Length: 424
Image (cartoon, rainbow, N blue to C red; front, side, top):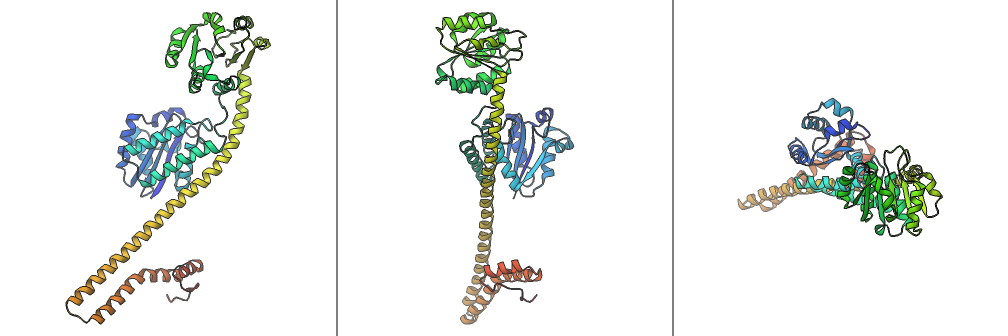
């Protein structure tokens, strides 16, 4: 069996092509059923996310062209377009790749944790479709274990690498009990959505969204169970929030020094943490002059992100070493299974030959033939039958004049170390 990985990801293809080869939950079921019918395919898993589509296939013939043509037919695309923007890996390279993917080392954002859950989901879908046997079960369970070790034994996911995540992590450092804090999100765009997602993951429940377009704010607030304000209501309610994070497209600051100063007086100087993720700025820089206001800009957070990216790169090198070792361990297990199968086949063949010869001897004895002659013939035939393949192997080694093979065969069969004198 040959393990193959055929993939298209953010490094090899534009988003326009990645969209075309992506699998929806419904089409995934159909795709796995279709792959099952492909000649030589024994097991398969399809990983499909916004940044990658990958086919992992255990095949009897190692035919990569068949996979390319299958993918092109399924999505009604030209084979050349897929071939020019994809990659094919086999055996050890494919094993290392799936481990790197699940560990977040091949992601757009290095070390992002969501991909492990996506790979697990892909494995579960394939198993539900009857596309998983013992070999893939071992491979993917081992992969999940490796990914967990990468996250627990390295710093790959310890540091923020997006300004949205960095803002939340910084707030977490400033306020010991972040879930108990109240947060005002100013804006309702993609960056604020990411901030909101990270805040929810940290257990923050007291949230409010202020936006110029109320309908947009209400749409975001609905997913957060948050309050909604217009921008004109911000000065009135600013005092109610420990944390303010802003990211709008406004050309002028929305929150001034005077507004924050008034809010601090009403809070009896209880500190406020403000993060301005907008360019141009949403919060006047003079706010930082206030003693109980802690203002961070997108540039401040970018420095944190750059430092953390460097830390993740270092962690990635450690993770690569771990994956190298674990991939080798898996392949050793796979090879041992193959040798077990060979030993089983060899023993079964030998016992079958033995039973056949013994059966003939018993028939001869039943017919009244001389017992000594029957036993002698049985011993001769059994010895000759069992030794014939080994004899051929010894002669083959001698004919190729390969001393290392000859020596290995001699040692394996408890013979002389040198069998080069065997007559051809």
